[in-house]
Structures are given as C-alpha cells and as structure tokens.
Length: 230
Image (cartoon, rainbow, N blue to C red; front, side, top):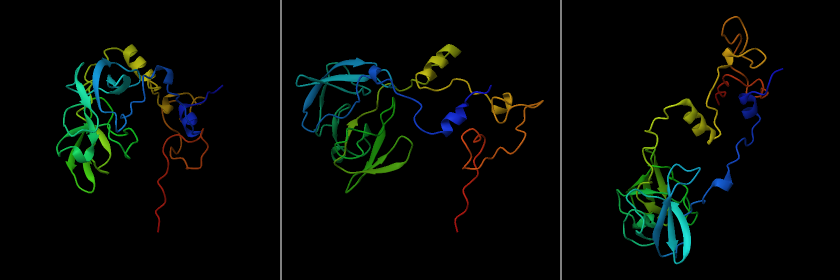
C-alpha cells in the first residue's frame, strides 16, 4: 500500500509546521518611542533564533532585543536619541549615511521587520523625503524617515562556518526547522511510492511536466510555463 508523498502533502496547501511557541523567549519588537535609556543585564541564547538576545532593563521593566556585535553586559543604550552607538535605537532620519543598521521597521511603530538574522546588517545610503537603505541582499529599499532601526550588526555571525561534523548533528539541526534531512529521488522509488518510480532502471517513464490543474498526487516533476499574454 502506498503512502502520502511529501509532494502530495505540499500540493494540498495549508500550514504543515507549527512553531513551538512555548520555547520562544520573546517576539523581539523595538521598544516604545518614550522608553528612554536602558542597561544590558545579560546576553542569552534563544531557541528558534540564530542570534543571541540581550536582556535590557528599562526603568524596572525587562525587554528583549537582538544582541549587537560589540555590546556587553552593563552597557547603557538609548531609545530615540541621536547618538550613533552600536545597540542604540532611533529613527532612520537621525542615522548618518554609511551606518550599519538592523531590525528596521516597515511602518513607523510596527516593532521591526527587516534584517534580524545573525551576522546581518543593512546600510544607510541616502536620506531625504525617503531614506534609501541597501539590504543584505544588495537590493535598494526605500523607508519612511520616521521608521526606526537598531544601530550595528546583529551578533552571532559566522554560525554557519562551524562544520556539522556528523550526520546526527545535521539531522537534529534540520529537525528544529521541520525540514527533512534526506531527499530521495522519485525515480529511485518503487511504483507504489511515487509516480516516477518503478521500472528495470531509474527513469521517469513518461512526461514529467504536469498541468497546473493536476491533483496533488499527480503534481510531481515540473509545472508548465504560463501562456504568453497577448
């Protein structure tokens, strides 16, 4: 008896991965506009994130922010000021050109949406009616000058340089992302397991280009290109 294929399950749509929210430390949003100054109390490792988090105390209230390269425990950070120091949070219009920033807001007050992975940063290119920022991908993106960002590079860079060394470590790493650590070709399977399986030697045995309206169990291989519009 056959079993449901990964391609079939994906073809049905919907969400297949539920993030373990009970393990997450915090949503990591930029603090309010009137928070003032805070002190870094600790640097912790947060499950589900590639970068460490900084535990910051603002007037008796504890907040979590992405740790920044060069910051340390006991350092004082400001929110909304004009001082360009790693870890400070301010609007883009106050940050000079050439400064590295991260956790940039898409809209003023949304808490930060862009550039949040370990070792990443964006660069302020120009300021005016719109602030031009070069993203880590190299693309240029415009932001409203009143959008806020944190100054500096996200800590934890180089995490991918350390080799996994063994298959078990790779399995556990990918399992935390709900990703299969092995991918078997369809032509290598039996006919009961995959539409491309079977035969005396590995071959598809028919067209591997399926129509877009095909059922999830049939939709394996390639999809045809869209028709050229007149």
